[in-house]
Amino acid sequence: MKMKKNVTAVPIAVSVLVISILAGCESRRVDDEVRSVDWYEQHSAERAAKLADCMTNPRTLDATPDCVNASRAENNVKANTEWGTPDEGVRTTPPPIVK
Image 1 (cartoon, rainbow, N blue to C red):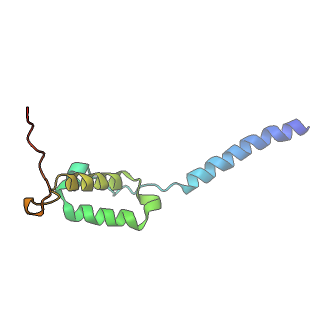
Image 2 (tube, rainbow, N blue to C red):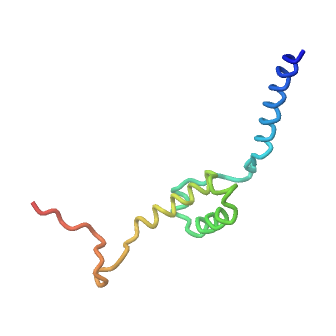
Image 3 (cartoon, rainbow, N blue to C red):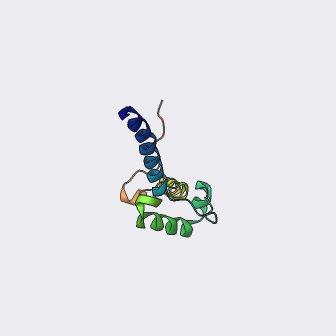
């Protein structure tokens, strides 16, 4: 008799675990369109707004595709800028290769 109780307790425990995991998942709204990295690179105001939105609730939004794309676009845009000017003594272009 005791064995039968353990056999039914396992499926019940697994079911409760699965239900609790699924209850914690948030679904994306249908009207939320995921923008591409290229789109965010071209739309700086929308990129800034999305990054601000992502930072307000990082636990739930930070890993969403839209936040990841906005973050990658921000990194790409920053990587393409010059980090100094020749007057500041900061090299912005690689030196010529001498053979």
